[in-house]
Length: 239
Ligand code: IPE
Ligand code: MG
Image (tube, rainbow, N blue to C red):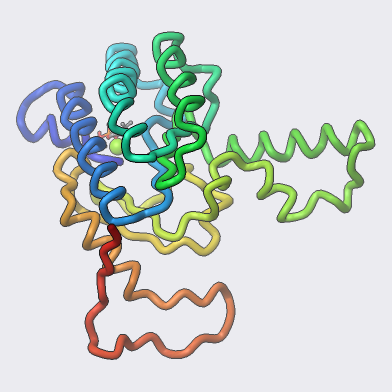
């Protein structure tokens, strides 16, 4: 979710106003994703690197996160949405943990969609943590060095518990990954939207999904040429 700061800058307003508008976009897109029938949505809300931003901006982002969790709690529970979080959660302030932890617990059995917030998250950090855990298991004799496989690493990545990402959408016009889901991205389809995150609308999500549906995914294998029968990708609505 990129482009909050530029959204505010374009209107000669402080960056935090862009984040406020960005949190409205989060509410909108979570609802759209649920309507579309997506089974999992992972939002890169705050990176491990974002802590180095000005204190006022970090504080505002944390308060917006808390407000989001408070105001969406009932709707998430009513709509069968499981709320999860991945990243270095120990770094989050107590005011966030105080609403995040109970919601994670209370929505544990919800199964319509999993909404994962990547908070204080870094893809490299996640890989390093998984490697460290496996190294500890080797050191204690629980597993052998040859057990440190691609699958074993995968199994230690909290962000991939919902499965590998099929589609990654980056808003804001940049063409880079910025330390998101690195290990899981191996065969993800990438979609770059030039719209700034606060302006990202349901139609933009549909456009991204339609683009995804027009791709031929080969996973390194040999496939048939991808020509949709009528030339147009079909967007199937669920629910
Ligand atoms: C939102 O956009 C990203 C978050 C950390 C929430 P930015 O704050 O990176 O916006 P730009 O890139 O400065 O426009
Ligand atoms: Mg940015």
